[in-house]
Amino acid sequence: MLTAKKVSLILTYLVALGCFLGLYGIASDLYYFPLLGLFLIGLLNEWKFRIYMPRWVFNLGGVLVSILFLLELSFDNAVKPFANMLLLLLAIKSLEEKKPRDIYQMLLLSLFGVAVSTTFRLDLSFLLFFLYELFIGSVAFTFTNAYANLGERPLTPDFLSRYLKFSVLFPFSVALATVPFFLILPRTQTPLFDAFARQEKGLLSGISDEVELGKVGDIQQDNTVVFRIYGKVPEEAYWRVSVFDTLLNTKWVRTLKEKEQNPSVLEPGEFYRYTIILEPTYDTFLPVLDYPVRLLRLEGTKASALRYKGGYYESTKAINRPVRYRAVSGDLSPSDELNEVYREVPPDVPESVRELARELSRGRESPEEKLEAVKDFFKRGFSYSLSIEKPQGHPIEHFLFRSRRGNCEFFASSTALLLRLMGVPARVVGGFKGYIKNDYGDYYIVTNSMAHVWVEAYAGGRWLRLDTTPPYLSPAVSRISKLHLLRDALVSFWYENVVDFSAKKQVSLLRSAVKGLKDISLSDIKEVFLTFIAVLFGVMAAFLAFRFYLLRVRKTPENLYRLLLDRLSRKEGYPFNEYLPEEVLKKLSSRPYYREVAFIVSLYQRHRFSPYRVTKRELEEAYRVLRKI
Image (cartoon, rainbow, N blue to C red):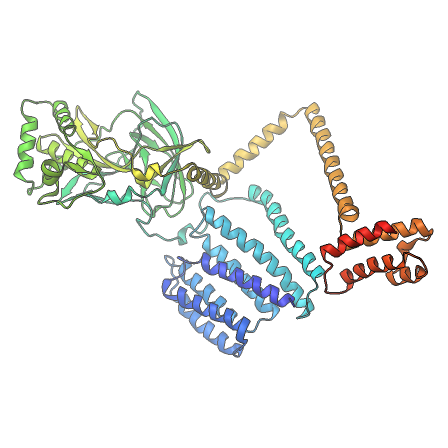
């Protein structure tokens, strides 16, 4: 038989297991798996062996190991030791004999685990984790209360059913009641636990501090969303992330990092105003649409945005949670001052590459003519490919004269090197190209598979874009289905209306509410009131009809017995509703339909006062018997 203790233990272990899963990747790997193993041993012991050691042994061990964890606490590492300690205490509690207070403590520790996980996870998966812990934990809490009051007495089916209904309805009502508090309680502009979140780099995006030949090919198979764009964007979009100025062997790196100010005066031209929500990249780059004019302050983080020569932006700290920023871009390319590093050519460039540059320069004097010559050269016999064969000799020489196949790094590196050999300053720009329109949410997404590099050449006092990579569509992009877009729309809604619900949005919501109240007329109030009354009466009518169905129409032992008493009262002229079942049988002992009445009464008594259930077939038979009376 089920007892309140057994039910509460099952639910509590489910909540604690959810806490372990929620803290995976947050707690230290060195301790996580041993503590999970200890927790599972406690679970096995609880259901099979029930051998418990003295509490003081566990308490002493827990205090000593907790001190060890707390010694690792620092401002830069505050969450991980605390998560380790929570899992240790849960593992210890799983090994102890469970009194109601122990179960309460396990539930409380699991609740702390949910709070700790918010320092690392605020994506849509966290919502599922939170709802799981909320509902299972609430049901566990109510059954633990029953265990504290009833002890280990068996639970009747009727009691179990009623308690389950209350336990499931309670968290629903709590969740609904919290919505007004979510909307009106004061909010900070940045997350409270932002200082304690991890600072790892390069976990999500393929953009890095260098461009190495052949490396982006792997990234272009990944459909992870890097950022979302809301607003106006051009049909052909290049998203600027970084500028690389120096070629070292087979890598383009950044040696210049000079800061510059946003332009105080906007030059004439077409402008694009848009908002970007950037996923946690654990890096510092802030993608902007070519060509950026101004980036407004970041929201959702304490970091600020810095602009560097080359027209790209970086954050002052790693992006460890979704952030939002507005930006303005135009159609005029950068005009930052020329640095001699953009002319430098490595000494190990093969002679064949140098000869090609001389041939392309022959008869062409202006930078614009040389740009056209390079562009025309890459249109003859070159093709895009993610399958990069192992080069023989210098990679650029092999690409230009043998394979003539490669990804965007090969095209951009070769283009920039040829231009420099031809006397035209050039640099490599890293970022993303293109986007996918998500009609479910009226916004655009950019994925890792859209990572791209191109070239900018200095001509006429400006940096002109030169993208010699043949047009291509990453195979990963073609695998993005409508289901993916629908899921991403849900994620976007979560970020926009929950994670990114800021004080600014609260003020905007309040102003809209006040404006709406001012615009309401007396006739509008009357119409709303009448609609409310109609809806209220409709709900009451539906409730009464449903209640009538439950109490009169639905075939149950209670309704069967109630119909029997009504029929007997009309037939005999006595108020049988006031009699107990035994008194009913005694009064009708001499009647010809006594056996039929006794059959129905016995089913009702079995349903109410014994652990044995009435079958559906017996209930159907009883209703047929009732019609004979």
